[in-house]
Amino acid sequence: MSRDARTIERLIIPAMMQAIIIGTEKSLERSGASAGALAPVREALALALNEPIADMPPHRAGKLVRRAMRATSEAMTAVVDGRVIIVQYLAVARFTADLAERDVVTIGAASHFARAWDMMADILDVRDDDPHLAEAETIAHRLGGTLQGMGYFQR
Image 1: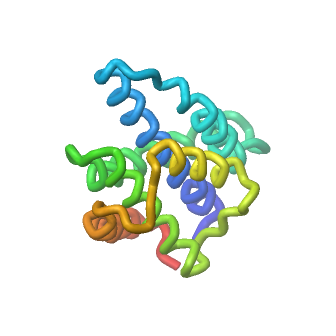
Image 2: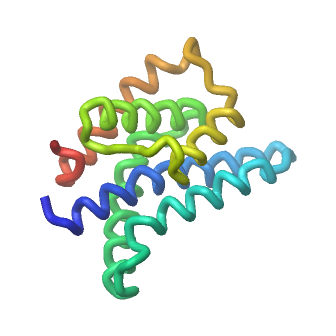
């Protein structure tokens, strides 16, 4: 796998989380609630998204970010599709956990992404016995198939 493809993979997972944050903010705004609690999550994700491209020339970084955003957008159609936010979050969480369990990705416990992930889990009050887990597992599998079909996360 090329270095560019690995960089794109490092961008896709935080970008999927960012898409969920945007959906959560819109949902909160429609209900009249404040999305202020999501600001620290957004900040941590912005830092996580910058890490893989921080030392690259701007033109190359921009190209890889655009490719990652296209892949993320296509993959997230399998996740979003009118589903509630908790299902979306759990699907991306299950997909990411599966990649980590298979040593395809490594997420440092003190990383910006892990911090964003933990904050979002607290905001959504994620529990091990959540009734949406079965649906999320199915969607995570579909998500993985979509991304593998694009050539990502195939190890």
